[in-house]
Amino acid sequence: MKTFYDFGLENRVVRAITELGFEEPTPIQEKTIPIALEARDLIGQAQTGTGKTAAFSIPLINRIATSEQKIVGLILTPTRELAIQVSEEIAKLSRYKGVRSLPIYGGQDIQRQIRLLRNKPHIIIGTPGRLLDHINRKTIKLEDVNTVVLDEADEMLDMGFMEDIQSILSLVPEERHTMLFSATMPSNIQKLAQQFLRNPEHVSVIPKQISAPLIQQNYVEVHEKQKFDALTRLLDMESPDLAIIFGRTKRRVDELAEALQKCGYAADGLHGDLSQHQRDTVMRKFRDNSIEVLVATDVAARGLDVSGVSHVINFDLPQDPESYVHRIGRTGRAGREGTAWSFVTPREIDHLYFIEKITRHKLTRKPLPSVAEALEGKQKITAEKLLSIVDSKEYGEYKALAIQLLEQYDSVQLLAASLKLLTGEKNDMSIELTPEEPVRVKKRFNDGRQGGHRRTSGGPGNHSSHVNRGQRRDRDRDRDRGRDGNRDRSRDGGRDYGSRKPQGDTAGKRERTYSRKD
Image 1 (cartoon, helix red, strand yellow):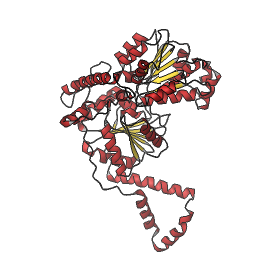
Image 2 (cartoon, one colour):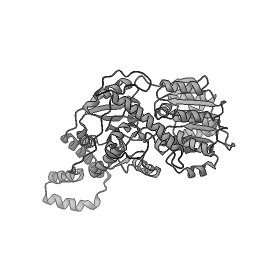
Image 3 (cartoon, one colour):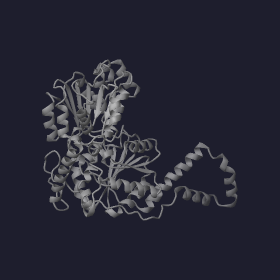
Image 4 (tube, one colour):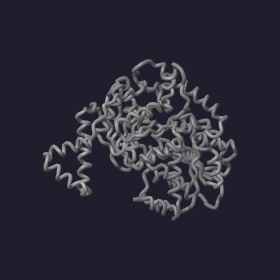
């Protein structure tokens, strides 16, 4: 069995790895670290959750001389969440060596970032848009960078960052070490690799079955108007420890989180229109179990690493199979089992088949949970909580009243009444969510191959949506070039493209056109 000692790493780096509880490298780490330590360019193909962050961070940290007072490492990520996660992991891995790193992303005060840059970080972890802002302001210079990492490159290109990446890499010395990581290898990734990598080694740990085998994947066919009722029944029946519910748009997330709160669930929402402080607050509450249900757009699908997520529910199907894989990958982590549910409207069945084909995993069809099943699930959890109190013997001050009640009433009746009180009755309220248009099979998958699937409705809609997204992306880029502090708010916040609300009768149509970027 290979260990981290076998790589010949510095003692300070190995000590940090050991204290983090890592005993042996994951497959991507075992293949990547030796190549990276020799400063050879590489292309790593691996899904999220395989340990790829440590795979490129460990050799990068090991290589840096802390006496240097300049930026020598650059890591590009698609979202602010991933930038923060990578920065946190680098901080843990370099705790005994003293390597300084700084995440740079949109949505945070740029003046604060400028102040932090005065601490002379060795590594910058940045989203392309905000990084370009700093380059243009001359607050970040890349002439001393000797290592570049492109993390989740397929996602960055899918979000329209190709030109930004090319601009950034053109400013880095040609004599550098470059590592590119991507879950998929479409033609545009291969083109990028040919342009900026020199004779790269290819490392792949993609399993035959793309989606994780430890995740039980189910779907329920349900009409749009039935979704919320189906969701509450499912939450009651399954009683998840922690659950992430994915909605397609920011509006959907806001409405869904509010509706769940009204029905008594400990829920909150996460999307790109929230400030960084709001995001941090929501995630802190989710991590410490103050809330049990996180409702999120795809902005949360990448980069979030929360242990203990038992369920992922796709309230709305994602547009891409890759997004589906990343979503459900939030559960079933670190060898644990997880459960993923997807709500599929009748008009989305073809899209479900498309996801199954690409992920090479057939989802299990399940019936809509009944009211009786939901009630049974709630009662089971209530009984478990009641028994845990019995086991803890922390009920002394209630015994006298209990004895008094038992003298007057039947014990079964008292216990049944207690269970009813603790279980709580579902609030009888009418919840109406704004309907979302169904997703349809894409005409072209993003690796350039023809999808070849039957559509559920007319074909031109998909093509025009693609064109409009491109036009809007160009318009947003031009608009953002002239901005100051929040220059890339609309582009670096995961899949969120701008927070302006469309006006007039076309609002609904426009939101649907760009819903993928929510």
